[in-house]
Length: 262
Image 1: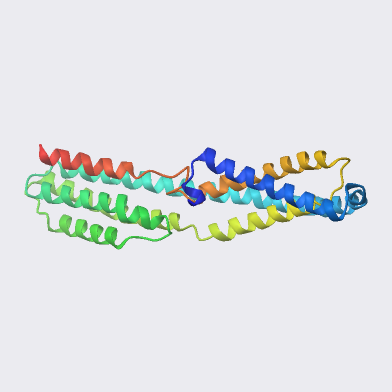
Image 2: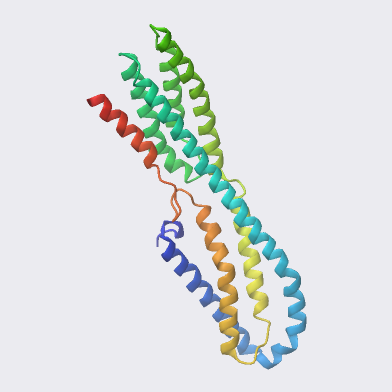
């Protein structure tokens, strides 16, 4: 069975909604075996007080989870855009330099972009960094340091590139940190616990008919599960339905390889 985060949006939504509807229905029917709706109606006032106290707490947890997950996801996307922009600038400036510096620098930039798009992309899905990218960054830095400038224009380009290298290293560090999302597991666990307790409390309510209880209960459950689906998708930004593509890094590498072949 594939992991949930490998499903597309429609498939993931169907799994969450159908699964939650089945869980709610089984729970409501189980309670009905031992206590019918008429008996449960005597618990409505007490259950309503408990749910009325607990509902705002769960609502706050849901808003907090959505906000934090969205901010973290946006931070990751922002760092990826910043890093690819820096790489594009470095690639453009390297192509203006004479040989042999041009070929050496473009080759190292290609190596860095491919390392990010390959091993580090897989590592970030597990909240890790790739040593291959660290090696590629060190190699790129050494290559810039050993590239000699013969004219004032070339010296100016290399000085500017040195500042961009610092920004590249900082952006890579921020990207990896955003991918880790240390609070993700704890936050999602809290969200699931709160949702589960809310569903459990709803089983104690007695309504005129079982059909009414099932319809209202399933709609109540679905309203919470939509938040769970959204947060779950945002917590898997590399493999899920809202996964960030590594295509920009590959485009940079391909464009440099093509220009070198011409």
